[in-house]
Length: 197
Image 1 (cartoon, rainbow, N blue to C red):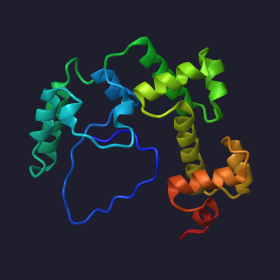
Image 2 (cartoon, rainbow, N blue to C red; image 1 turned 120 degrees about the vertical axis):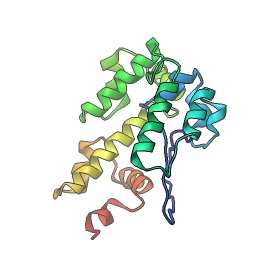
Image 3 (tube, rainbow, N blue to C red; image 1 turned 180 degrees about the horizontal axis):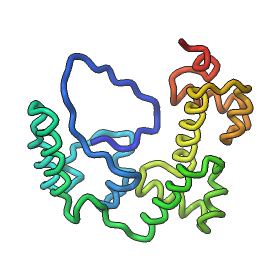
């Protein structure tokens, strides 16, 4: 299993095959296991060391060559293997993380952690601790990643204004910093991304 990856990565895929997996909402795996997501940030670790054995067995039993119906049946078995169903245990800290993440996704005008602190009446230290424990990355990184996705979506949608204006709209007021962040995530500078065929 792979934790949150905080840097750009490439995967070369050759041939043909199938993959089965479980995707959690932000913080879901930490809430399920009671372990800090810091343990697997930027790492791939064996699921058997993290999740309950019944889930590992259900994942291993999925018939990847049996077609879509067999895959769906296997994933239903994985879902049934969760101790309390697929929903993770929710405590007050995890509820706060879910609420903050929801705001990050829904309100594209949120561009700074200070905005989140005010809206959720919580200190930056508390947000930092909660996000590192549940998500594996701090709130500034998560917010920056979501806003960068907004930038890419705007460019893909035909943005024809200046890049400096788009960067400022989503919280980057230094063009060099914006270009570095964009290149780190996308793999090329924004000006080249706009001109790509």
